[in-house]
Image (cartoon, rainbow, N blue to C red):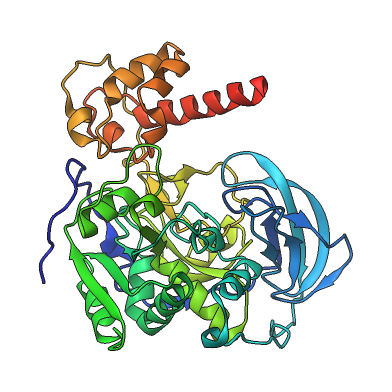
Length: 442
């Protein structure tokens, strides 16, 4: 197996995947309460269709999509609606959420459902089934999957790229999905190829996952053009633009999307979720989450009901060590530090990483020495040093002119900066300020 070409620039952070890479996926018990934010996806939040006191069963729709770029929310456990109120959200805000008191003695068996037979469905019917099931991108961005499966009619899609890179340190949920459920991933790929009318799919997997590569190769269907492509281990290999450049040699232009170069990119977890819709009829009510870190007593890969509180995951994994210092939703490069143990797991949460004091120690920031390391690291060839100076000066419109929108907040520049300047955080704040200013003008 060869790694083939790769994108230019990028970094090689320590992987730390050995904590969970070989741990089989387990199912966590249902908690006493689940909290389901109406905003668990990119786009408009869902609209609730239940009220306090309503009885719901696992898999019932409790909030409907509010528009095309939106996604419904389903009850992840049977129980009674406690309230619809504001609750801590993973992004640090307080956002509307539906709280359900879980039935303690329920078998949590969902209502009988009609399982759609995908071969007899048109592309529009497949898209509708995926949308109704609330499937979103499970790699972190949580973009509604039905939108990706509905490219403009004048935009021909030539290939599907399946993202199995999982380049973030610590995280192994995609790794274990491919290792333990390769047939399900391939079934999801088959359905997407049918829906999009494409004949070619490429699965990119970093070479630090040899068991996943072998499992996906063994399960590869003989009647489809599906290629399993080992990738060079480099961060951020799993970013859409980097993956397309590596696997197909195509460059997505600034301000454009993968579909503009004839490609749709999906995460392996999303492919498996699509397959489950057409295997069981059950919507997206649970996901695989890596709970790991040296600040945790028993790291694990877990099947978690959406809406489970962070404290329940930590308790199931034996609790925190004495030197635990910081908890991050997602990976350490792009994840969100959490300040509240009652924040719930949403559809886009790939992992929980508990860092020790030594790992999260705040380093003193020094003036930029113009060494150029951030330029060599940036995978989209921006000038982070210059953008950082503009951010500190509050010159956000100038940042926009210097292609701030192309920054994907991967954190590579911050990682290599010898002056410990938090460049990625500055860019994230600058993007927020630009959106705020545009909203005020509108």
